[in-house]
Length: 207
Image (cartoon, rainbow, N blue to C red; front, top):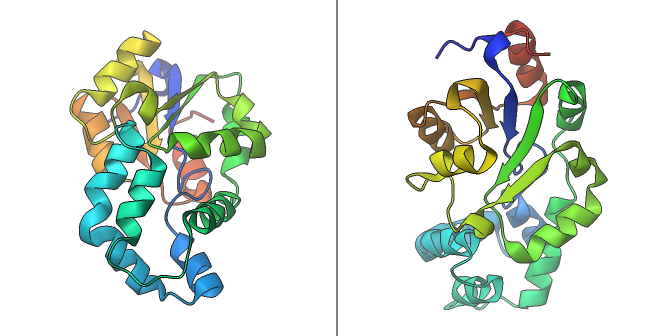
């Protein structure tokens, strides 16, 4: 997709793994703290909790209900409160240099954050990261009842913001989300690192 810099008015950022860490990486914190091998935790998470995780982010079930199912059938000596603590520790990790890129875009475009996330954790994120004030609006998945792989999500976001797809750029590290945004006619950049993102934005004369 050819992105014409003069057309872009709104830039929508993903949060997890683009600006700060999300679920990815928590397995290493748990391994260090509780001795549960990272690969064992990841396998259990994938085994039967992928759909449940999506439902947490859609706001269909609670975080506690998800954790109960995640722990079911294991002998893990870890409480739900401990798991939440480790998750918050992972959220404390910012992706290197992305905040600086966002700062360079401030004032030039409408900056929006679109995040598939858990309601119980967003209060912590908002308190931890004052830099989120750089965004005009934050749209959480549980607020709209949809995640970025759901049909119609990006069309719904465009309608909510009253913006045009061709005047919008979406940045995410997940190729499936990128494909869904492209299907809605939105311009996209697949995030790999802040350094590469800045190069792409510079190449497109957006920064």
